[in-house]
Image 1 (cartoon, one colour):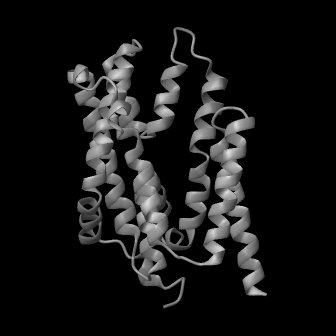
Image 2 (cartoon, one colour):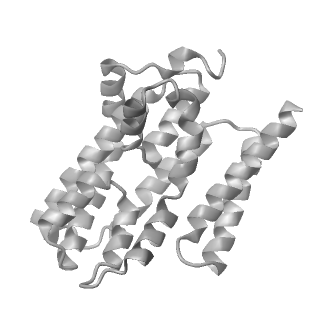
Amino acid sequence: MSYHEPDLSKLSHSLVWAGFRQLIPVSLFVAIFGAAFGLAASQKGMDPTSAAMMSLLVFAGYAQFAALELWTSQVPVLTLIATVFAINARHLLMGATLYPWLRSLTPAKRYGIMMVASDANWAMSIQAFSRGGAGLGLLFGGGLALWFFWVAGTLVGLYFGSAIQDPKSYGLDMVMGCFLLSMVFEGERNMRMFTIWAAAAGASLIAYKWLPENSHVIAGALAGGITGIIMREKNEH
């Protein structure tokens, strides 16, 4: 099947619902982090409405926690923008990798889907596309599941926040990382992919140690993306 087959961009109610159901197990852990965010927001003095609206409209877990660290009576806007951009810069490459299947959609559908794009549903949709399947149902339906449980968790954290004092003490901060690692091992296994991941990991570790905070996200994404482009060009020649 060709890489750009039209049916790979297929999106229907049944595919969206299937994607929603498939991401529910991961979403349950996302809800726990949402509750932790709600608790942290209340401890930081953010009013419940603002915290709930942030999860509802922003939907960016780690970036929201970073924003809380800067949340004072005088919010440093430029620093906040730079920090959130650094953390979410990977979404630029996510959008680029998904464009071949999104470009046939109307702008409203395209950007509507990307509003709920995150690491987990992006990884699973890319995996589906690499196997010749239609992954937009996973991307959109799975994103809706993650978003719904994140918002629900935030509300629970705001209301019953004392139940989750420190999710890291239970190892819950590693759930998403382990999930994404499993997606790597289930994907393509060849020298090209190994080289790409090695370049991304190496750049991230170097940036994490010697560059400003959160810059490792950008460094790893750029290193992996550039390596992938170079190797693809070599293979085409």
